Each structure stands twice: as structure tokens, then as C-alpha cells.
Length: 459
Image (cartoon, rainbow, N blue to C red; front, side, top):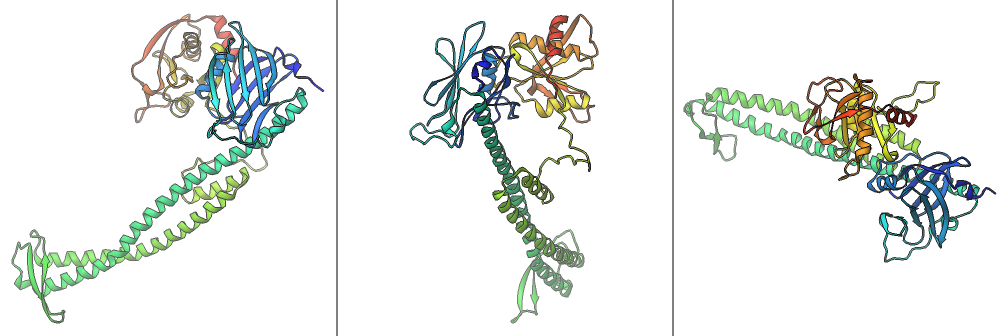
């Protein structure tokens, strides 16, 4: 038996959220290195240990708060403090922090300071405090003193996490397929209108024939005439609206030409109508298959079929035969600044565009060395959060280092919220326009730069 005492003193290295109601805490110590995972999901609730950090969603404000309060601290204790309650205590220079996992009928995660004052909380989405529910399927193993048992439980939690990810992919794919169905339905209605114009061609021919038979009775420049139609039984006076700018014969010829176009269009419309109806049937069948899909491989296959039907999905790069698929390349390098906060640095001109325009959020902070070529630097921030001065300085040091003024002792660095950075039409790769910029005159500290470069996460 390996006791959880091996975790004592481990450094809290990283905090992430694999999903909206789960948390992972990377621990690094001399006796044990691993990841503590906690899940609030019904059917996959509990805590456990895993060897590798599970990938997840971008950091929420709750995760950002945990990083601020816990990252860099040392694990003081990991205990079961009450029934269905597990508590993680982290020692920091400014006092202890307690992260409480409530895994009973009303699951949540609560961060407390040394005096027990709540600092932040995460409640399971859809949790109803007024309704008692039985413990989850994995509720029999909320806690153990044995690391091996916690690792087995962590594997179970991640297995269920995979099922959650499949469900999320299924929902996303169904939304895209529903959009395809909506577009096809609109096309079907429009094409039905084109088919209906075939009846209009008969009316146009009848009017044109009547005008040609009565050219002598139509004064030049008339807007409306009443002509005797002997094809009716009994014969009747038919009102005919004319274009006063056209002679009567030219008006009749224009109607004949329009009728011919309607006839040709109606034939094409019938073919398009049959094709659109066939595509709608395929989309309906695809919907049913997606709803019952349970594996990522099957969802990949169905996504490709959806793409061929017009779904706007990102095209996955095809792997070459006989070779393993290469890991997805990120357009930025990730380093760690003040309080272990992430700082993202673009790898090149095209990567700078991708980082700033696709990955950064409007409220994140954007930095760049002033008036020189260099990397775009992004500091991820929670909505409404002000960038700490120490983190801003770390990011500015990296912006100066990854630029054409690398090595200069003093560098001007521009910083501004990402929402004020724009790409103009026709601009070169990496070239952006910036509004409301602020400028920091930075004196680069070699030791700080060395610390930042050593913190880079290798992917």
C-alpha cells in the first residue's frame, strides 16, 4: 500500500478544468508526481489520481482564481474531513488555502482562506439544492488512503470524461447538421417557387399572343388596354398592362422570351427539387445515426459525411499511410509568468495572426515590441480581470525578447486589450492595427528572462 502521505509537500504546479464540472490539479513532489482529478458529474463523481494531465476547456474565472490562490503552494494535507467531503490544504507564504470537494447529494467545490472565508466556488451545473439525489455510480469510492485505489478511481473518472466528450461532440455535430437541414429546407421552398413559375409562362404567352393579334388597336405609349380575347368562351375583354416605353410588338416579344426562360428554369428547378429532397432525406438519416453514435471513431466518420452534405466543420488533416498521425501543432509557445500564470507567444508571422485572431479572447491582454518586428504575446485573463503588474512585466519581457530588439537593455512595449487589435484587408501576415495602445518602457532583467524561458511548457 502506498499512503497518500507521499503527496505531502508536493508543489501545486498547474490547475485546469477538463470539463465544466471537473477539475485537475498537477502535483510535483520528490516522492510522487501526478494529477489529482475531481469530478462533480452525476454518474462519475469523486476524486482520484492520474499520471497525465487531461486536456480540457479554456480556463474559466473559477480556474483563474484557483491558479492565483493555489499555484506555487505546497500540499499540506489531503484528507476526508466529513462524509462525502474531501479537503485539500495548500500552504502558501501568505497563509493556508483549503479546497473543499463536496461529493454528496449537492456537489460543489469551495475555496476557503485560512480563516474559513469563502473565496470562490464551483457548483455542478443543473444541481438542484431542493431535491435529494442518491450518490453517483462511483459514489462508493469517494476517498481512500491508498494511492493505488485513488489511481484506479482516477482512471474510472477519465473513462467517464471520455464519454462526456463524446456526448459534447455529438451535440455539436447535431447542431451543425440541423443548420444544414435548415439551409436545405430554405432551398427546397425557393425551388418550389421556381417550379410554380411554369404556370406564369402560360399567362405570359397568352398575353403576348393577344397583343400581337391586336397591334392595330393598341396606341403607342399606352399603359393599359382592354383587348377582345376570342379564345375565351364566350369572348371577353381582357385587361393588359403594358410598358409605355416599349412598342406593343417589342412588349409581346419580351413576354415570349420571358416565358421561354421560365420554361427552362422550371425544368432545372424540378431537377434541383428532386436533388434537394434527396439531400434532406440523407440529413434526416444522418441525424438518427449521430444520435446513436457512442465512439469517437464513428463520430469522425459521421462528421465527414456531414461535411460532404454541407456542414461547416473544420477539415481534419489526413494522415499519410504507414505513418503515425503527428500531434496537433499550436501556433504559440506557452510559458509561465507571475504566480504560474500562462503567457502565450506566437511562433512566427502566420502564427501571430492565428494566436491573436483565433485563440485570444477579446478581454485578454495583447503585447508587442513597439515599432519593430516581433512576436505577438497574449496574457489570458478572466472577463473583467485587471492584469497584475508583475504578470504584465513578465509578458513585456517576453515581447521584447522575441523581437528584433532582443538583447537591448531598454525596450518600449505596446499593450492593449485584444478587442482593440484588428486585421485590415490586404495586410501582410502578422501585421495588425492597434487602437488605444499603452506603452511601457521596459528595462529587461536577465534573471527574470532566464526564469521565464525555463518555464516553457514543451508540447
